[in-house]
Image 1 (cartoon, one colour):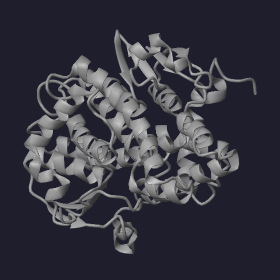
Image 2: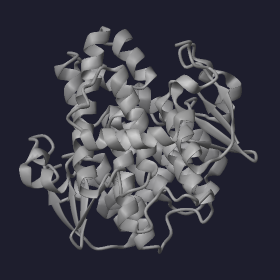
Image 3: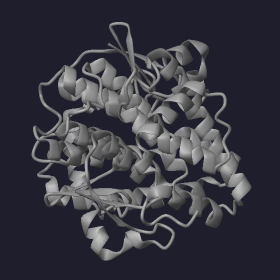
Length: 210
Length: 210
């Protein structure tokens, strides 16, 4: 398997966590989002959205981190990263979407660039705007984890939701968002991060020097 | 089943299409997003995100349109709205996420309100900003449908991806986005819309008069 990623991409980080939890080996091809490498024609042929990540497996190209994670759990069932019942899976997917649809799209790099270029927002205002949506989403997640979690976001073992929570908390730190109001979310993220240290952005081959 | 929705919410529209394709009966409780009814305490208890839609089934509350659609297809398998193989499901989920994560979050009502209030954007600039992300996403979807579709987004029958494409095209019309460069996307949307006319926003009990 070849993961097309970028060390600091939250979406690529999700997939690296899923691969680490499954204990799967893979190689990496990295595309620097700062210089727009993901828009190169060769990559655009692989992924028409020209976004990170993509996973190449046996000549098939999978895109979109959430779709890749679901595929990983279907193809490599052990350890399971989804509950065994439909209602449980729906809760885990709702947690995933609370991040993938309602938080992350508002702070990925193309939007941060646009806030600056199109709306003239400096970094402080831009971070405050991002922080508002993050706080909204984290508060809802904290309630869901209180209802359904037990050390992890859903139950007592990691699920696909935790694969998204770790990068979301990493981003919160980058944007200076206070996460102390969300202790269960933070605990779930820490428990998952501790099991997947190899997936951390700073450990990737293309990472900036510390 | 009780669908908590709003006639013009694209996310609620997705779920109505899924319910219509499955031939399932349901009742509606609608929350006017313009006046913030979804933030009322009773609804916030049901859905801590205070977003539309939610589906109440036998005392369980499901949230997030994509999670609800996956649940519907798991619990009511006929007609199937997902391919039978893992690679196919990954493609359909990638198509869903191209809309659910990379287009819709940038033009839902809370963001449109924020573009006006926080960044002082008038409707023309705001629509142009939304239109840019829509065009990016639609171009990628057109390529994916060319590769995988056959009248519908994936193959020759509707899938969960088509449940998202119809509302995305409805939004494109609202925002004045030219969709003529995406004939396969438009055809898939039209084919699905023709089978699910009861789900159209104008047909909902809370719709504004025409």
